[in-house]
Length: 172
Picture (cartoon, rainbow, N blue to C red):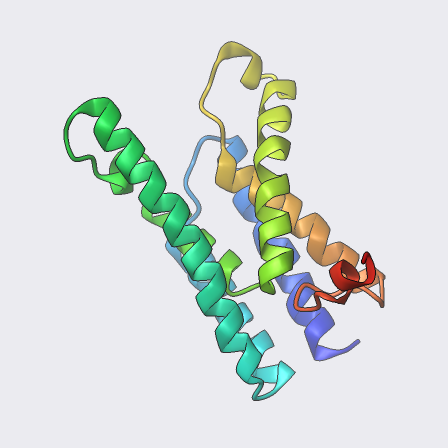
């Protein structure tokens, strides 16, 4: 078993724990999220000194930042006052989880995952027993579950990788 496969398996276990806590209505402990960030850093180190990884991080962080800025402006206009995204709408653990997602994908794969994860979260939350009663949508929990599936695909499919965008360019 390669080191990258072991890192992915550990990440899947931690992601499933995050999902379990979200199903129970709890926040994941901070050490679990910091563990995921450490695994992402270790994966980067094992991939070698590649300059494009820093570009990936910056592009993905810019995408998340733009979305959060849009959300901040929209909510502030709607409430007619400045809002605090953290802790009023998101928890610190959500921000750390998104930071880990930012570090875990190439830009095209990140954008694809991020776009797919929103409808997945909506459908999944409505199909769950708590979703039918109008409970809040556990976006981070369902994103953790979906990312666990993505990492399992990376482990089992040799031609698939979360840092590899070649599948997109082969479409054209």
